[in-house]
Image (cartoon, rainbow over all chains, first blue to last red; front, top):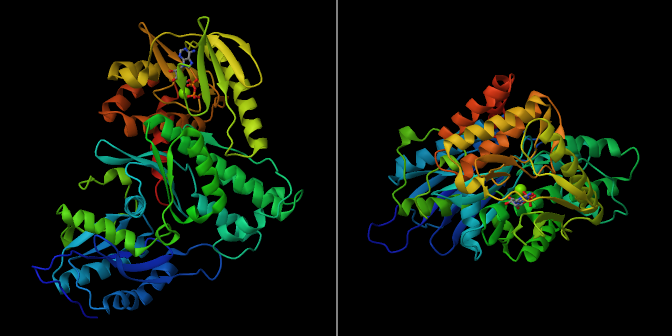
Length: 332
Length: 189
Ligand SMILES: Nc1ncnc2c1ncn2[C@@H]1O[C@H](COP(=O)(O)OP(=O)(O)O)[C@@H](O)[C@H]1O
Ligand SMILES: [Mg+2]
């Protein structure tokens, strides 16, 4: 592996970001304007869900290649940022180790990034959103966040599993390929009726574990297409309802969608109708910035670098439970 | 219209509050219809039940399919006047509710009204009877989350709430312990 450290007097700052909290390992270099290079290696579980150790092994096997690829263009870097959490401990440690090595060998500062906030910041970068309520929906995470008093606050979140894991769990039980979301979305389009399923919203929190179980047991009285449709309609209605509650509660005028499940067209449609009816603006970034990606880590790394928000290698332990509201926001 | 929350329009007509759950185009008509009807029915019934448990609530005058006519409580949302002392009073009300086996389902500082020096609880559309530690824990967790996201000095607010809650509810200790576990669960599994 080789590096080009940037000359001190060069004009544009660029940052290498490495993401690997779960199944996607991704590295990218960004500057103020654009993504300059990126490379990805995706772990596909042989069976069942993510096995943390297998995923970490996958990341360990591919991290050198992925980083080599983004650095091969000879773009100089001013810092290296990594996803510090939340995420699976073994995966986080693999990525952090690589980031520390680069920081030490090339003498550039190290930046520890909160993964959830990176999703929000890349959305603010790549859309016109300024101060949105964010619905962040991925495998393990499902949260409604907004900025208040110097931090990203969690207004609502899942009480058990994330929406992505709920969809994957159901998909596995009916032998659809992993990840389950796209298959469910496609089957839902062919449905003919709605099967009532449990709708669980408590304040701005929500729960999906009972929903997937109920969906599985409805299969004895309804077609797979109808159950996929009903599962999506119920789960997404819950997510949109809590987003609307957060908008009403905070009085903000924008909604941003983030996270891999944001690729679902029905979820986007429901959010956009809600926003239209409430008279707030709705933003969806390009699909490649919605799922876990290295560019979002690099981008937030860049914002933090500009505020001197770097960490020493010895203080850079990973934070598997890193809450967005535990991170001080110095850049806004 | 005096307020437009997330799911209802609140009007003041001839001194009475009319709360109308409006249609949501974003969700399937069947889900929308079911939620609006269920929540309207639950709210009317449980607002009165809560009063029987010693929690001040508005008097219900009439109920339609998606509409409730109730007493106007003149005052301020707790959200705008919250102090540690009032948090303690909120804790007492929630303690009474939980002692009676009811959970509110949407405990936020917008759902308490301070009228003179009397504190009222409103918005029982997500309430139900359940005396399990888990249901009560989630109920309190939801309020603490509002404290953390929206109010300054939330540690003190939580301490005082807990004091009031313990005073009126003998199983408060177990529930507050569960709240801590629920918080940890929301984190990465
Ligand atoms: N009976 C009432 N008396 C006075 N104000 C009320 C009453 N009911 C509702 N409000 C006002 O309207 C707001 C929204 O009503 P609420 O029942 O909480 O509906 P939502 O479900 O939309 O939150 C309350 O926060 C409160 O300010
Ligand atoms: Mg309310």
